[in-house]
Length: 425
Ligand code: NDP
Ligand code: HSE
Image: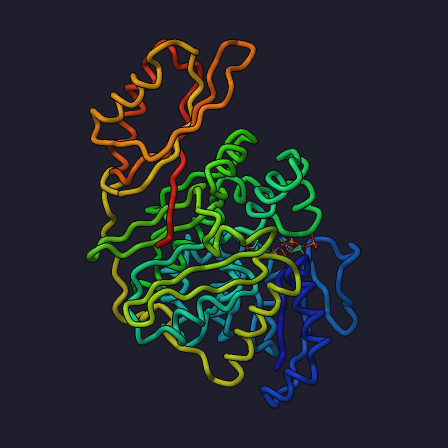
């Protein structure tokens, strides 16, 4: 089996290393010798995490997808324009394609999967979601008896690593992000990680597979972690929560809800204790109930594990062929954002005046929102009170309207912070 790789960076290098170290194991499983014969890179002389002995290197990725002797192309380069063109050419040339590129699948997956289907070839992307966790295979195979109701997960390793280091070591956001980049976790453009775009790509893929609908990346509502302050982390801890960056997809009576945002989770929940670069995905099926999957969300060999598992599936012919239930793929209507129900955390900075708390709670009450708990820190040198409120479960439209009214009050000194709370019951 001859393999051509586009990109020999973190993931591509990891694939070459795992293929070498587990050669005997892979032969035992497949009865096939797997060899990487060609690879495309940007810089031929760059130092690499893997050996390139026996691999023909080129700076022209089209050379790889046009080489007749190559059976399977691994797209591990990233980006969406050139990568899309290369994947399409590889498929038209009769090659199966495996990719770790969630941006590519989330934005062009509908078209590329149709192309692969029309050519009776496989386009697989297990590594695109949650790094080394075989989450797509779990949804597609192990949970195939279920109607999936909900998928909720920590699906960006970089973001989770940043939040964990900020909480446990009080480290600075930018400093931790730099470390995540050095470790090879972050995307080429790390705003994809910190602004939730990477998680939104992954959530669109998860929802498509879970609910059997088209990839609908444009319907994911997305908020990143860059606005989470040390004060939010401290308040959350005091109130008994951890702040995690979650992707949540739900099928509510045939309407899809897809959202990525920072979320307070009670510390007693397993997801609240998934730290560092680790990812975890909670899936609720209508037969099995809740199941939880945990593992490394990024990194060279963890991601390579998922890429090579797809390769083994192709060799053994065990691909669950039409991964999206392809013959009946349709767009799914989205639930109105204002109708989405959630508990909320509000953080307010208010002048220390008599009646401030009463005013805030009466505005909340006027929007049918009641308060579950309130914490007020001591008054600071500017005579401002630092207040955190946890509400009951309310419609998103109601909380937004209430915060607009609170914000108009003269005693409010800065923009009110709103963060979702999920109890995960
Ligand atoms: P890297 O930046 O580490 O590697 C990218 C590789 O592609 C490099 O070898 C680079 O060459 C090569 N490359 C880029 N552009 C070109 C081009 N135009 N022509 C030829 N070669 C090119 O990225 P990662 O390995 O981190 O990520 C690869 C993909 O995997 C992305 O889609 C990413 O989202 C996804 N992914 C990454 C994970 C991770 O933990 N890093 C986990 C899961 C998915 P050179 O080395 O010469 O610069
Ligand atoms: N940048 C991604 C993350 C890589 O940190 O999760 C894995 O998809």
